[in-house]
Amino acid sequence: MIRLQFQDLKLIAPILKALEAVGYTTPTPIQEQAIPIIFRKNDLLGCAQTGTGKTAAFAIPILQMLSYSKVKTAKKNIRALVLTPTRELAIQIEENFNQYSKDLPLKSLVVFGGVGQQPQRDALK
Image (tube, rainbow, N blue to C red; front, side, top):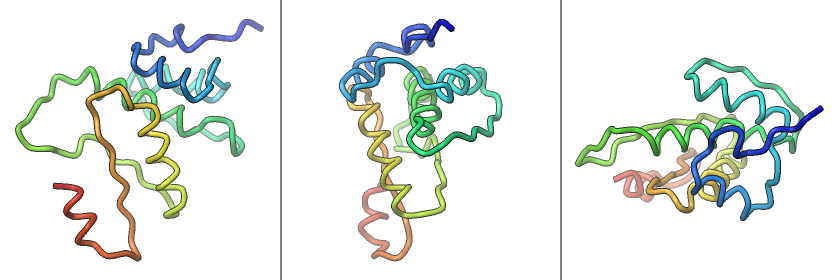
């Protein structure tokens, strides 16, 4: 079976560079299948074992689509929202978003309960 390369998924150069920096060489099966579906703006329910790259499977296309978006506003509007069941997973996902978007003009922020709200509110501004 011929494996796709990340370039075959038509990813932009800043994302390809970030993936190389974190040591990703080829997409995993979940990434190979999910990324094109998300690029077509279709809904997706993906299941795969821990450590198979599920976060990258949805984060990469989100970041690329936000990079292509023509929406420019004076305000810093929330343009994507990822919900997770635990604080630990939310932190992990935000770290991944930051890794994949390090060369993009995008920002991400993690917000969760059980801590003071004011610092999180300030970060959202």
